[in-house]
Length: 171
Length: 402
Image (cartoon, rainbow over all chains, first blue to last red; front, side, top):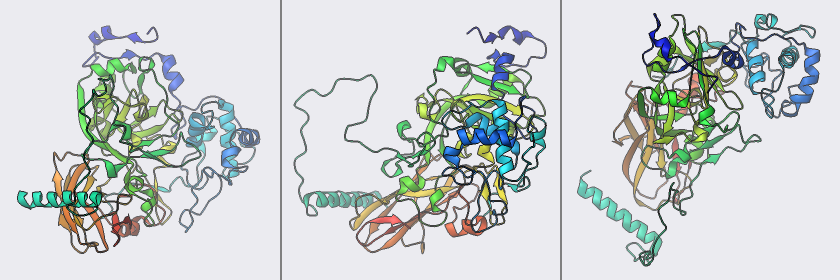
């Protein structure tokens, strides 16, 4: 296991409070390769950029087969529309109507989509598809360029729509 | 009921079975097959069940067989341990094929020392083991608006119970040196969905297990081989399978699986997030729909009860549509956050009726009705259904979801 560096010796270091001395120092390259989760602050967003026009072509080629030509048709999760429907008799939970953070779109598309080839989109492509979906939902302009600075700044329509779990909610 | 009564009931039940098989109550049976006149099969390295046993998980039909669920056949199981091969599944990107020698757990973020662990490393930490149920928060999702699933496998089969063994997550995190401002832990799987959930650090330091064993042997691939989280009492998707990474942070990540999914939409358009605990629940597994029609006479009602908040305190059963409730017998040991088996002797008089069970847990919480749940959460909830399950017994002895 050449990639793992044994650190048993480090147990003797001052200030090292390890009880068992188990584990291996994580190589910075290993951390960088796996540190893909994008929190709302966007700190882990990679370099790159994309806009809705670029994203439209990528969406048509890689996403539309499952989510529909415009993101409204399905058959699989509807991604577009539903704004203002959540309190109605027929709520439609989409990225535009329900998702509280735009960073989640980038995170999920990057890690899990397209379904048949997860993780296959480049950072530029993920920014572009994210821009396409946010524009289709009326959240950003068609020429807005998304990157590591602009994406976390977007305030989603349902940002304040979530409440903490109050259960038990019945006696 | 005294033991004499119980024996009497048992005898009556045996007669009843004999009657069904032989055509008349108390009639004789055909002779049993004789398997003593030849050698049987030789010893085997890894056992398999009898060829006569065929129960299996029921798989939710989906266009995406790698992102669906399979449901435990609760009606046919006894005791509280679910055989590993029948433990429910919920996958988001299929079951990865992981060589344990090539697998790593990376712990990083708000820690003093980012570390990587092999499975062998984790096995060197002090052992923790416990019996614990796991329940998908979507268990019972069809029941919100009325009777949904055809049988108990389809209404309640997204709960299973195993003995889990592994390392205490608190020990492994301490080894990395937790920074004082850390509040949340992101868990990430090595599956095709790179499944991620945020977990409060306090819970991680309490009772979370880095599990590498289930029911005495290595995890099954579909249960997260070679390593999964086991987060007692919390909705199943938090117990991330094929665990490859833990990152400590100051805020929740708001992953897709804790915003778009696994949240509960309320009538006013707001939604609850981070509804972690699976509340007290129970169900009668026998008799239940899909079995042979009941004949009048003795039947032992059997079922399972559980609570994510601790031990089951009591289970009550009604055999008259909820007019009266009787105390069921709990078969111990009654363990916290564990399936608990209950039974109640019952003599069916052949008339149409409705049967159900109701769980009380040690916090005093009582399993609610569907109507009570909907009065608070409305008509558009999907997850976290724990309503009382009624089975209608028709005059012909058949049961159906009511």
